[in-house]
Structure formats: C-alpha cells, structure tokens
Image (cartoon, rainbow, N blue to C red; front, side, top):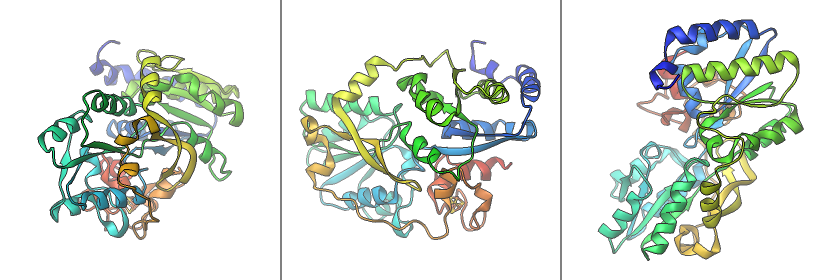
Length: 361
Ligand code: SF4
C-alpha cells in the first residue's frame, strides 16, 4: 500500500473486516482519542460493519471541542479591545463561549477577526496592520504546537513587536490519565492518535499500559489503517496481554520527533490547563516561557480567565469523557444542528455530534 486511495479501497478493507470478525472473541470497548479518527470512522460507514461486541466511543481529542468556554470568552473580550485583531483557524470562529456568544458574533459587531491557514500568516497581518496587536488563538495538540513555536521564534528573530499568542495548547496523555482515573469510564483499549504520536512517539502511551493495563494501538486515519489497528487491539484484548503497538509505522516512530520537541521546549513549558467538559487538568497544557513573555498575550494584556457558563442543556462534557453518545442529548438534531450549533461538538468538523449528525450510525 503506497497511496491514499489504496487505504480507502473496499476490496482491501474486506479481508481486514473479515480478520477483525475473527479477532473479536469477546465484547470490548475502545476509545478513539482523535477527532480525525472519529470523522474517518463515520465518513467511511465503518461503524455499521463492525463485529457485534466491538463498541467504539469518542474521546477528548477534538481540539476545538475541548477548548473551554472561559478561553472563548477571554478571546472575545480581547477582540473587543481597542487596536486588536484576532487571527485564528476557521473552525474556531463559531465555537460558543458563555451565553452562546462566539467570535462570529463579535466579528459581526465590528471586532477584527481574521481566519488564517497557518500561524505564520499572522506575521503578515502584523506587518499589514502595524498599529494593531495581532493575537493568534493557539489551539491544538502536539501536532499543531511546533508550527506555533516556529512562528513565535520567527517573530522574535524578526523583531515583530505587534504579535502575541493566546496559548490554550494541550498535550497528551494527561487528559487520558484523568479520564482513566474515573472508575465510571469502562474501556478496554485505546486507538491512540496518529498525528500526535508522530510528534510524541508511540512510547508516550506506555504509562497507560503500565498503570491501567490498557491495550494501546497507534493508528492512521484511512479506513484500512483503522481496521488494522482494531485487529491488533482485538487480539491483545482476547489474549489479555495489553501493550503498545504501532499500526501507523509509515508516519509514527517509537521515540518522539526530536527536532519538533526541541523547538516546542524552547518556547513553551508545561502548565495546568482547563478543558471543556474535563475541567482543570495538571500539566495538560503549554504556556509561553518567560524568555518569550512578550509574545504571551495573557502577560502582555494581563488577561485573567473568568468562570464561564456552558450552553444550557449541552452534553458535550459527557460526550468528550466517552460517557454518552450525542443521541443522548435532548438538543441533538432539534435545536442543535451544524447550521445552528449549540455546543462545540457540533461546531467542529471533527466533533462527535457533527459526525453523528452528518453520517448517522
Ligand atoms: S448535540 Fe449540540 S447541544 Fe447536544 S451535546 Fe452535541 S453539541 Fe452539545
């Protein structure tokens, strides 16, 4: 297999599905951590083909979904200050904070909000609007952070003064440890995120095997990648021999990506971070080091987070913890749809509610 089309080919997926049928010898539950996995599983229609007894639940790996309402409130407040412009990736534009307010609302009321395709585009904005402070909303996991670190480094080296970052960056696996410490969460295996693992290495999940006896397999994102990872998980669980396996060797190594890790460590340091639905989790985020404090908007503008209100009736918190499916939410498909989202899990293109709504079971 060399090209993406092959990984989506039904004739190649069929033998993998048959092998998965054989490998599932008892009921088990797997959490897919990454939002890209969630969307690929739904888009391919795989759920309806999975063997009886194999239950998939989504986890907290959609970066937009886990961005807390208090962070959204804070960036809206920054957007409404004099001489500021917010730069962000497009999928954050409609994410609701308190009172269902979003940057889209702020923009319609005159705030300057620019959607960018790369953090580096923010530096272009900084040159274009020298009288404004360009604030980049940093959201994402280890896959995104090296690009933001490189942008801060470039701003530092080029002495671009009117640029800063609001870092809400998060890391794996601390949220998984927080979830697994909750006895209510009953899972037997983890489909580990391929993109994040490309940076942190498959070995980063070893503590989950050691502490929770959890079967862990790193998987890619095409249907055949996911089926292969599920086969390995089923075999481990059938044998009762939890370990880490890597089913995404064309991208992921056992060890971390040293170059990316070094760049991130130069700019960022670990910090406690608030997650939507999961609350404050120790050392689960990244803050900008004092050496680069000039690029940390929380220090530059003395920003303090305030308690926020979640959208009334929204069950995103329980869905992100793998405890409920979107259909358990009374608003699903009625008041909450992709055209009129109430919670972040319906806004994001990787959100579980959006996937359920678009593709169904
Ligand atoms: S359907 Fe909408 S309101 Fe319900 S949990 Fe999902 S995002 Fe929240």
